[in-house]
Length: 227
Image (cartoon, rainbow, N blue to C red):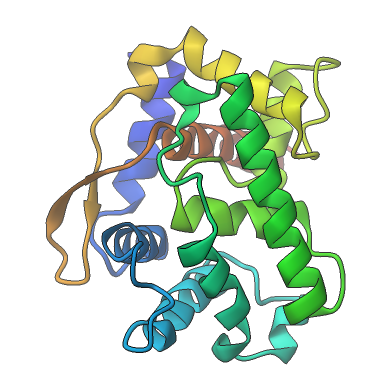
């Protein structure tokens, strides 16, 4: 097993059960994937807002100077309504990053960005926030956080702007996947609220996200130890 496989397994090991922080992704992803046609309906809307809010909070999007700190889960209603009624990116994964699908992902990114800016935050959201929403709901892109983008930058120095969600960065992610398909095709079952493995699996984009995060995170820890 090469470095990618080892890092994914290490990250997987952190999620020993659904009480660990990393399983916040599982709970959110499972909810939206199994209720995608209903998330904005009357009997689902409150739960949809709460699931997404909980995941974003657990994954660091309600800390520091985040404008979400000034909001409640109910503020996400416009976003949830969009996710049910207008999204066409549910079935896209890294192995399907064709030019057409990349354009769809970018359009969805811009739509979420617009909703957050105009109806929720009243300011331009970070790329990290938008991509964490797309990862937690659709599982179709990695989260562009500080660790993942640092890994992408080192892998593709000069070939893409790792902190910008655009055609170049998505094609770099596709290239990374294509070069290491065997490692990124691992089967990891999604855990549900009862702590049981479900029929859903982590997407390939999620596995790329796990690798990118874990690689940079470990390097930073090792550098601190050596100082």
